[in-house]
Length: 459
Image (tube, rainbow, N blue to C red; front, side, top):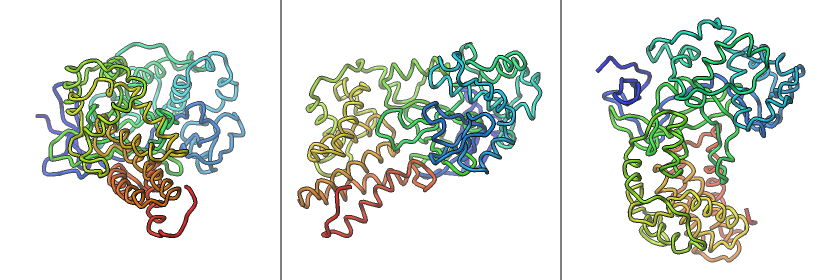
């Protein structure tokens, strides 16, 4: 094997299938919840619905003020505005001042295409200060991992290309005519290397996404798995968005560290179609090898009570406890195919969200248990959304206790909180991580329960 490039506990080694893979260095181990790699964004761009609501630099969801020149970019502080101006906005601002965001070409694009156009503009604004346009014509040689970490522009140029040729998004005409080499070269690395910056605490599928971001070192290091042992968390700090790759489980020495490029809940065929179209490869992880042998998922029947009971009983050892006696993709082979259909997850999560807030709480308990069982089958162990759903179920248990004064709801709340906290503490719950919302719920409920039997209002 070639001499590995290393950083921290990671080695980047050659791989027979992909160009490289990140493995835990010999003699090292990674513990569940440990931050394996932490990197700042090169550039980010907000999705259209978040413009003016989040800061264009740090992406924090706090009051912003528009740039006095272009009136398009918005920042939460003078510090963020100054940093953005020095980094890239002074080059981009004149282009936005001409009304580019209001042009038909820009407005007729999808939300993701608009964000990609803004991301490409910001990357040009940054890169044009340090590199000549012609330098984007040549391929970058492989570099040591430490060098890639210290030079994110060169690291970006070292990334793999998109598997398919695609037209550029709508951009200002003056830029298209003056910098075609840069734009085409940079665009050829988009989508297959960019990250969707999101908040996992949202109950609505995909509604937690608020920005796109380029994190070159993370893109260069980590391969995909539908059964990953790590995930990408986003930390929003003043002046910067950081990506943290966190271990979901204990990872032994020399084992590969892999993250999901897609939502693991997507059906097998949908995952493979997207991986082929966007990334140009076919996943051969353990889960995919199992699911390709199973019948295609079918739409769940109306009134899925029996289906919900089946998935709950398949995972949990009893109707009240949180001890898991079976979980993971292997169990799917023994359950009805409709459980694997993405519509089943949507049905459960939508109904659960309504029941958590409005009741009936007895039904929320059953729906929530089924939803958590499904998460444990479809997502990796300790995946953050599972812990967040559990925190919401504990909230429903507390509301049921306030309504009925029945002790069983306190018992259920305590067990559910313990289950939730065990996952969220692994997934990451620091204050600056938006994934911490579930842990905040846990802490509030634990305080209320500890103070019982005093009466508290519905939360």
